[in-house]
Length: 430
Image (cartoon, rainbow, N blue to C red; front, side, top):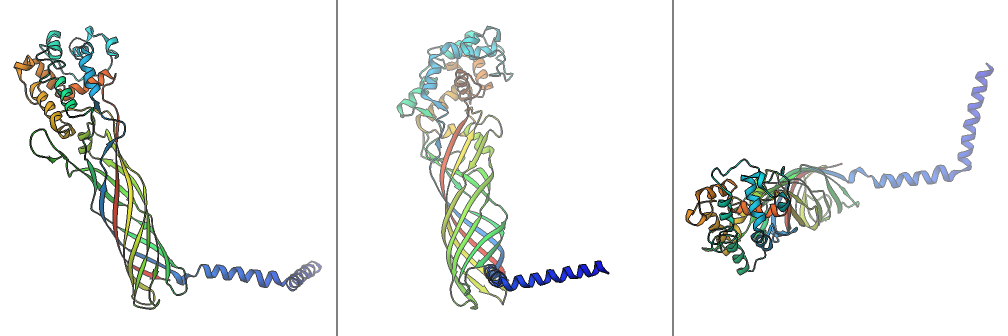
């Protein structure tokens, strides 16, 4: 009994103390607390909130700059002339294939285990003398003959003012003309008249886009023509476009149709970007996947127009059209570069340079064999087994650099994507 009385007494005293405290400190109980609650309630009014679900369609127009070599051209005039001057090195490099034990490795700067020229091709009846004739003979030699050898290519470059062989001029990229996805947005009215609103997409499937290449070249003979892979897809990418819209609705908030004017901001995040094998082969990638592509993320801001159609107390439809300009940059990186007659970029070098390369391929077994000029069928067979004259010259330059490829090269293209965005959705107010 005493314990129960003691607990009740203690409870009564505690309640009395709380009552006294509330009477003594009215500012805490009646002023600060209600003021904060009102502010929070006003700031989080659910009747201003709305959500929408619908379709997004983007029409894209591309303005692209020319593709440029960032790390420099693949081959230079100095490279080609240097091979012509290093006759012993070039001779040893080819002779290594036929007589590995007779090679001066110190001259080449390579080791006996180097994989260069280790493709299994042999020149069955070839002799060092035939190879030397191929390289050094003043009438038929690859390094000496001014009519069909490297001197012809060097002269063509000098006469046309070229100091290098790299990306042909005038190549541009064009993004796919359209893209579409579905999205879910959430918005909030900033005033009691439901005039000013802010809206953002909280969920949307990634957009998929592609890039094609454009360009024209003037070959040595004939009129100007499109490049060999003109219009073909060279890259694909996915895109997440976080989007924010701020604007004003006109007319009474209960009107059936309310026009809208505002601004749209977008941040484009590119991911899962891939180069196609068409591009890899064009620029001289040795193996599948040697060429990679990436796109720089970009932000843009533009105007927006639209209308909201009230379908009842809570439901509505919305149509908005906006325009956003995005400035991006495509970067193409190719490793293990090696130019061959099958690298279509060679066909687009144009003019006298292209003629000189074609003459060499016809003479030395790439696409023909002039035995009177080249000396023997065996020499043509040897060059053909190594991929043609262009490939052989590339290998000679690579060997002179101490490598089995011409290296890694980077190209870049600046582009402006003018995006017209159409958004059709159905929404609900809360």
